[in-house]
Length: 251
Image 1 (cartoon, one colour):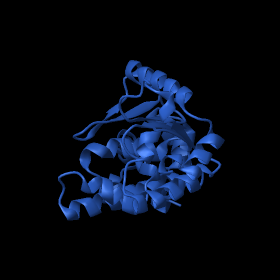
Image 2: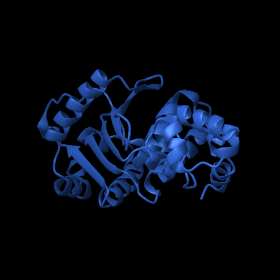
Image 3: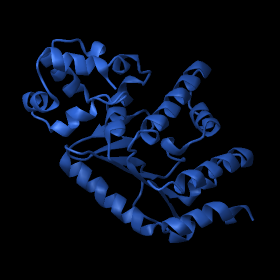
Image 4: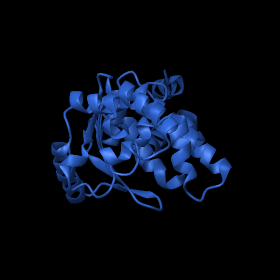
């Protein structure tokens, strides 16, 4: 548990409820901060630290130790606080489902120094733990084009497909494949939608250079419609797992 936060609340004579009232957020949100590893969104961290008379790094030291690249940090905070994640991937296996070797192979295709590749691989593996090893992991639904499964060296993909199958069989993880015979579909770029307990949905859009957090309600609604459509093109969960196991494209 976050003993520093508990002691700071006690010293100020505050409870989760009274601190939440000061910050204008739900008390359930503040109570979740008591769990080790749970870090509030940046704006909530700053406001809570001010109310408690503490520095942010005293209350949540992990928030300043994280090795994320700066442009990705806002999304990681949303991702780690989500109750559900819905993603579509057209190019590669979703980052949260990648093996270490696959992540390294994907990142090595970019013009990065070897040390930077290894740093980003470690960050990706940390993200996976932050999402899936939580006491209450989010519901995760991933839709990916079958072409994703056909791209990569055979040995690399054999291990990655085994990982996909293992993850897809978890009770809170759903993997849906859009088969090649489905033809053209509206998914033209990779993105992820995150839903929270007490705030509007947000999205993350990948692009060639970096990525961007999308919070505009209209844009999020548009991406949600695209996700609903691509989900409709995809196979059901059981048939997707069967496809992953059969790998008919190798015959």
